[in-house]
Length: 631
Image 1 (cartoon, one colour):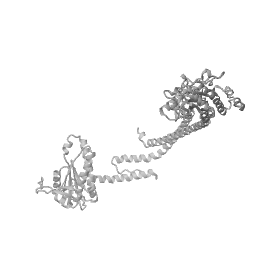
Image 2 (spheres, one colour):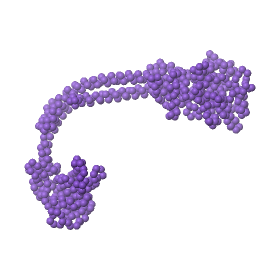
Image 3 (spheres, one colour):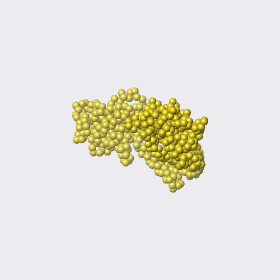
Image 4 (cartoon, helix red, strand yellow):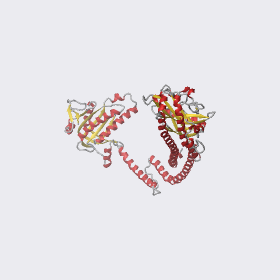
């Protein structure tokens, strides 16, 4: 335990935390910057992809919205819809929508229509182009009546060898948006389609392909209202959907897969599920669940969050594609694993930790080397300090160096000499009760002998002190008195008074001995007023509230040091001292009572009122006291 309290140990314990703190701060800062740069890289990738997606969506929307609106306003379509002849409307719309779909698919998927795309001679017969489409490329075409029901084709109006609408891909089993169970839009609920479809809207649909339904795709569906141009009455809606391109997410995945940071996987969250060609299927359900919880709980259209998937931390970015749409939400999702970043951080921690350990070893060697040169002079000073503690003020330490330690040793020797002198002063101070008197004794080698002086005396006594302290513990009584006397002593010194003595709960202050200020009576009255004010202030915070009475008297007294050779006390004696004490005894709580001489010397600056003449104990003649009213 002794070693832990040594200078060497303290130096080590001082340097080591500094080195460790710098190492930790460096590590934290490096990790923060590395993580921020890492995430910024992926955020930029996400923004780039979402920007590409948004640009493609805007381009498609601008190209299709106007064309679909014109189709919906054709006179023959309006006439058929007004008559609720949806079969006729379907027969008119179908070839036009197929041709529109073929054009769009040919521009977005060049392989549509053959190896070189849809040739110009094939365009008049959209049916032949449609026949060459894969199931995943089939457009989504449907007509909905005003109640939100999908309209079927009556057999009598069916074209031989052709259905009114082409066969649709198999819908997902969990579809909550565009599923056609019971022939109705399920997400409408109790709402009416005409109440939410005020203008053309865009929604998203998840569909499945193949016999086992393992292939999924997201369709962007344009829902165009059909209205009577005369009355503006809502007659139904036309649905036209095309598959979303996934080329961008495949390209991003392949590009980032070869990077050292790890692949960025993408997808679209729709119908509470995640559709993706890059995110493993066993991870999609968990990712979709977290995104759904975040969107439904926070309502935020864009967010970044971390989550563990199969024991590996992943970072997820998502942005809602249709935040203001009245239809169910869909979101673009980017997902990337953080295992590469975690490995980099682990290596960073290991490298910085190793450097920190080396730094600590170097610091230890330096500390041991420096401490050897410091411990000698410091040991001398410690030994000298112990000698001073034992009262040997003649001790001196050798000054071996010219640096700070040498200055410290020289300062120690000066301190020892000063303490020796102060010990001499203390023997004098122990014989007196006031610092001014002590100073006079030090300056006058013959001491302060008896002399007649004109002095104003102040006695301040606590009223009801015995009753207040009757049930208090001794320690509490001392604490109370110390607080009270300390405050009053400060007041006495501020007004030039000399604290003569403390007698129980009474303090005696002199003005005019051993030196006079020329206005001793006025100083005494002002001091008394300040004492009352200080006591009132203390009563607001002190545990016990005290009241004092103050007596003042002025006149000639005998002043000097009295006592024995071993113990002296500077004090005053005489009739006026006794009078001041008696006036204090008759003063009520919060009162200042003075004799006529004090009032005569201070009356120009104070207000006082006379009290009835009274006979005081130990005073032969009647006394005419005055009560101070204000200064």
